[in-house]
Length: 138
Image 1: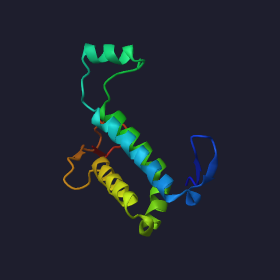
Image 2: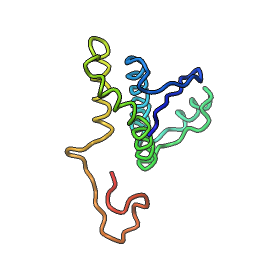
Image 3: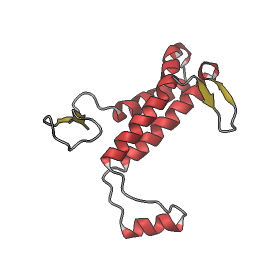
């Protein structure tokens, strides 16, 4: 498990040494980025959208597939697990603004990991429709 965090300045520290606000902001950043990818699934960009993206320097604009989004969310959540575990142990420190941010984080995580009422499709044995996992897809 990852135990060290690298700041944007390149400094490293143990995750347990991070200030609670820094820890929470790191979790929120990862969760918001993953949610931004998920929100792009199925959006077909018009030629005008692609033109605008190229005009402002975004050369690799394309539609995001559900498989790509799921892989990105899975990778992000795995990277966030040590941070989320540390944040869990610090729940008593989350008051005021930190509590509001924590509620936002929990809301985003709930949207990223649809457990109740999720439309999970099961493929019959031997069906190669899902190369990543033989049992379930989202």
